[in-house]
Image 1: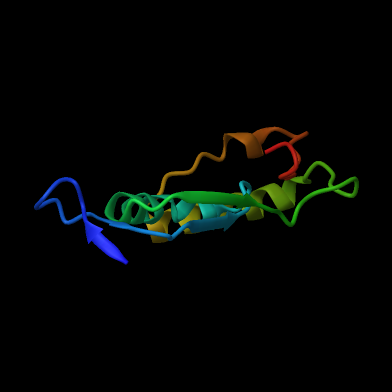
Image 2 (image 1 turned 45 degrees about the vertical axis):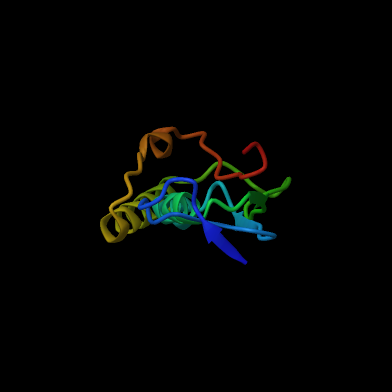
Length: 105
């Protein structure tokens, strides 16, 4: 059930008995890229959010990335940035010991 927001004319609504579940991986560039859209949804509907974090890059098999993998990932991040307008930094990829491991996140 929707009810009018506290601020008439703002275009925002609140949604009763609804929870938004945000499922993502902190190391996923698309999860970061969608942040502005999620912010807009939250502002408009004012529903509570529960974040569920998962990831593909975890565990003892995760190792520092080699130079070719870092170049490839950096290229991918730049493509996501170009398509979405979301800014990314590739500074971490310049470190030779950087591990693409979501577990610490």
